Image (cartoon, rainbow, N blue to C red; front, side, top):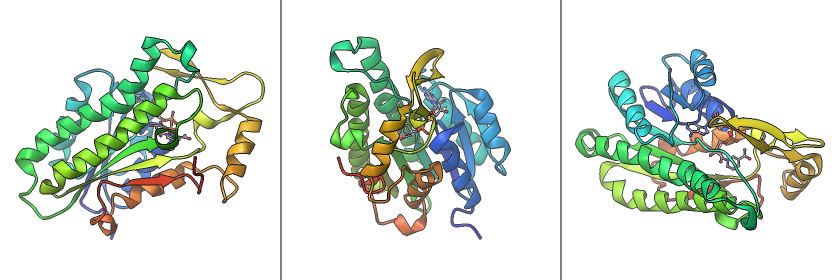
Length: 266
Ligand SMILES: NC(=O)c1ccc[n+]([C@@H]2O[C@H](COP(=O)([O-])OP(=O)(O)OC[C@H]3O[C@@H](n4cnc5c(N)ncnc54)[C@H](O)[C@@H]3O)[C@@H](O)[C@H]2O)c1
């Protein structure tokens, strides 16, 4: 018996990193998962290892993708119990170098995309929730940058702070549907966004454009030392934190921001 047997979940940005580990964690606990990612190949690779999972590629910056994801989940599974809004990426620079495109891109993926997914889910909840007793779960991924701020991360921090407002507001709106809405604000987790480089930052391709990502070895050492636990988080640490907000034992917790940072504050 798994803790999430019979549950149906949607995880965005689940082709890599924290999202892929979350899809696996939820699946291992018994849920069937719709694995979304911008990149079809990694979405399919994640889903292929998970019983009953399906992969749906789609860029959440496209206005109709959120509706398609919720519709596909409901049509395929017959319902939707868990929504994890995880997709995101970084595009940092100091404010004097920040373009309007850069600002808009960060707000779009971290705030507007979550809004569109949740609006689509809310439209389904209005006619379908309340007919049964079980509690449904939303987990929105934020960041410690959205709570404490981070130099050179203005637009990212603003987008991740918006996640907190979305979470607290929908917790109030959706109590009537028996839905808990929480956020997890991560500190440094080992993914391609925080992977080490020695001279030049690593390159990742997001939305067809190259982005410099990664941390210098000094920054990684600093991140480790900032934590009382003396390390960065693993993707499994990240997935476990999200999982806590998805299981029945958290049914009385809503509107909260769980800081999962290995004890780093600020
Ligand atoms: N890694 C960290 O230290 C850290 C810290 C705090 C918060 N976060 C947040 O955690 C989430 C996951 O990040 P990660 O570190 O696992 O990164 P990652 O790059 O390993 O994985 C993110 C996934 O999201 C997908 N994605 C990006 N834009 C998308 C879009 N428009 N539509 C659909 N999918 C899209 C990417 O293709 C990628 O597979 C992000 O929201 C990130 O901001 C990460």
